[in-house]
Image (cartoon, rainbow, N blue to C red; front, side):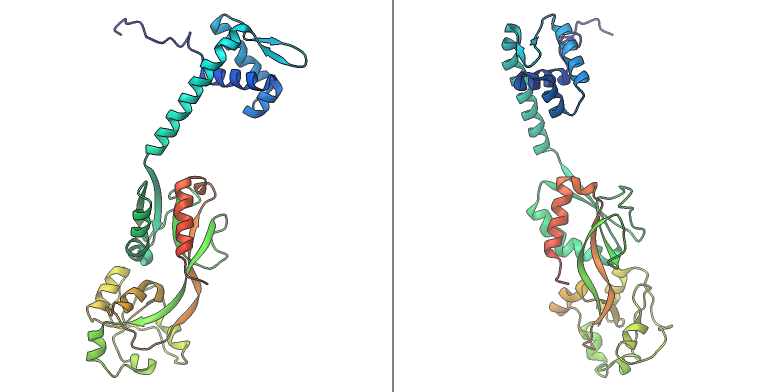
Length: 302
């Protein structure tokens, strides 16, 4: 300790709750109405004024049965208190305006790269005051538990009870390969012929169901490259290693750019969709609500 006398003493300077209580009573000229506005009991607000008057050593109010009036000292004190509270409010507003707003976004590898490159880049350009903290993992964050603010999840409409959700896009599966692979294998013109091609395998979507929807019964392929990572699967597909089965919404931009083609033009609409999900508590944050609303606007029609 340096023994210096502090410029401001906590024993002399009123607390903010005391000043707020004083201002509210002066405005309403009534303890009960002021207590209602501040969501405290009349006893609590009376205690704050008692503390304030004891700290200042003056009486601030004439307490009457029907109406409370400021004393001469209270009249003198009021404009200074209002100025202090207004300055404090302005300072907090300025700090909040400059504060970095973050949204923690949880994505699966299946949608991660697509969202980042085709949706979230535009969001960050339009909302430079919000920083996105993006986590792409196979083990998804617990949105109810507050591990992330917002997530995109694949499932059915009655999944994720307790979360606020909106359909992002439906899961319609298409077969895709590189133009070079199709050029080298021009005989792939039907599902039956495609059974003889190299089908790239993964654990999320079923080739068996895709073929069955077109009237061809077959087992799930047991041969051919298997990928647990969707990015590697897409890369292998673009490198002409075989045909992949993926949601159209995730590859239609590559089809449009002719990086991928559909050897068989068939879309299998599954019973699943991708949903934008968040907890009601997380959506109380303005920046989370802004991202949620923005993604909903980008959603494809159901």
